[in-house]
Amino acid sequence: MVDAFKRYLAELLPPLGGGRPARTERYIRAGSNFSFLLAVSGGLDSVVMVELFRLAGYTYSIAHCNFQLRGEESDEDEKFVKKLAAQSNMPFFSVRFDTGKFCLENKLSVQMGARQLRYNWLESERQKSGANYIVTAHHADDAIETFFINMLRGTGISGLHGIRAIHEHTIRPMLHFHRQEIEQFAQQNNLLWREDSSNSTDKYERNKIRHHLLPALEEINPDARKAIYSTIEKLAKAELVLNDSVDRVTQPFISKEGNRVFIHFNLFKELIPAHLYLYKIIKKSGFNYEQCIQIAESVKGQPGKLFLSPSHRLAIDREALIMEPLPGEHTNHQFEVGEHLDELFTNACTYLFLKEKMPHDFTIPTEPDVAALDFDKLTFPLKIRTWEKGDKFYPLGMTQPKKVSDFLVDSKVSVPDKEEVRVLVSEGQIAWLIGYRIDDRFKVTKATKKLYLCKSQKIIIP
Image (cartoon, rainbow, N blue to C red; front, side, top):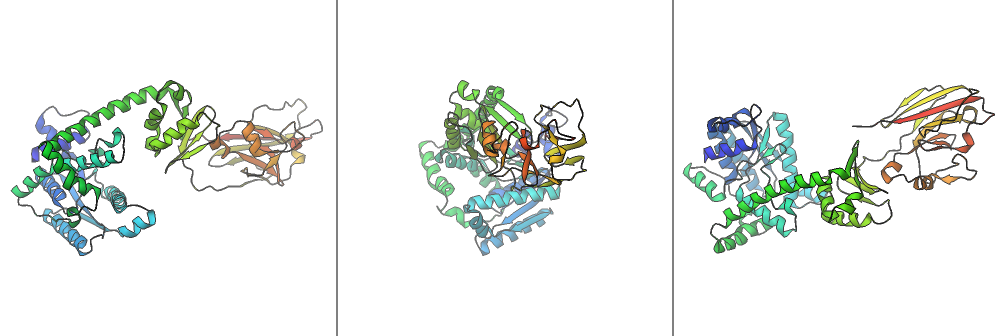
């Protein structure tokens, strides 16, 4: 089992010297080039994992989470794992969580809350300790149980591959072993471990699958676990092929500008069913399948509808969907522009200001990011701020005021772009809707004696 463990672990690690070693012995030694942080609960699976790492001679440390959910039993688990680390003469890290309070405050189930606490802390310890990878003791039967849990929740193919063997800095080299093999190894090596009393109850859906569903399937096929795990591996490979195909097919319909992703409407005309392709594109940004159906339907209607995920927002514009990370807490920053200010730098834009005697051959600039204003009509200091609901101005050439919101709608400005629009204000009056139109009251005329030129330039974050 030790040699098989070395091979499985090596398959998950980056190639040495730019390629896989040709000889098996060198291949197995790949784990010697990395350090590992082992997540150890004290149960059978994690104790066997520690022993495999010890016998393999790899560099590792041990981390334990006390979720304080089982009272004295949880504390005894922590003492057991600490002793195990001391026997191995390896570094030991531990933490105690008020899991119940965390789950209540964040409206999470105990299992989801504990998982979030665990992985966040493990990643923090991995970085502090300098370990290359976090290692968990998930095995093949865990993957099978996850397969059924996801299937019963109505997941797509991405949920049917069970537990991933590697994800970012977390690896699971025991996924190829079934619990029966792990039990045999523990007995042969006289290992001691802790039993979690919660594993014997049917309180959790995972335990119901473990205690009832899988034994029933084994009555039909004694090799049911191996057959199911083989199916999981095939589905994982099929997902890779599917993702590659979707990426190639959808690429012509996707463009990026900074942190914004544009998904052009032609996708909904040429790819059927469009919502499935859309789901493959945006699910990593937290959007679910039902939202994708709604988005696909909304494309046919009026623009301006907004969809939110925990991390992103997606706006339906006139020719494309615009997806971007959710902005932080909105603050309407206000910048003051003094009479003698030449340049102003903000996190989103650079502004240039020039005042001079009115040239006799001056030509009014037509670029929307340049404003030519009559200096004597302005009252300093000017202010630059985000436009607000109810703001009005007199667009150049108009004698009646118009709401900024209506002007932006008429100009077909997208929802995300509207939030970035700012105004140049003189004593409470908008002199320039920056990047779009100056106010007629501040325009240059034949009577203008002094010119005030303003230029804005957006900062594009690659």
